[in-house]
Image (cartoon, rainbow, N blue to C red):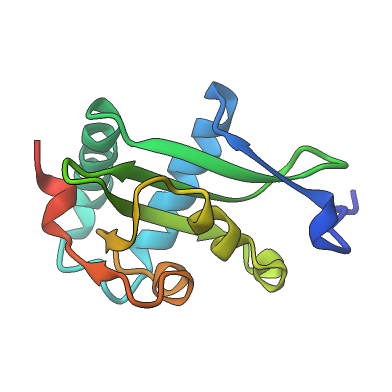
Length: 146
């Protein structure tokens, strides 16, 4: 089966994440973070449990997700997890865009949709976040706050 890819940014829609999106979001977060050079030194046998706990903690405290979808197929091309901090600053916890879709500026468009004052903070240093959030500050400890 051939996968239809967008030919322009007009074929990409942005919306809040839906319950059916979460399986892909969680899987892509864990898999991409696992191979990231900045992921730290979590033991292999503990990686998924530690990462799952972190993500669940962010969701429990109100982090939100936006997704970019191909309008023709409805397939997710990318997503962002974010929240607004107590002083009103924007905080990006994670940003993921499929490699083939990076050329459409999806990461930057997702960051633009994050509410709060910008530039803000990001908690998971990942290539796509660093590139889409110039001038933002890395603060990993924000993801661990209760």
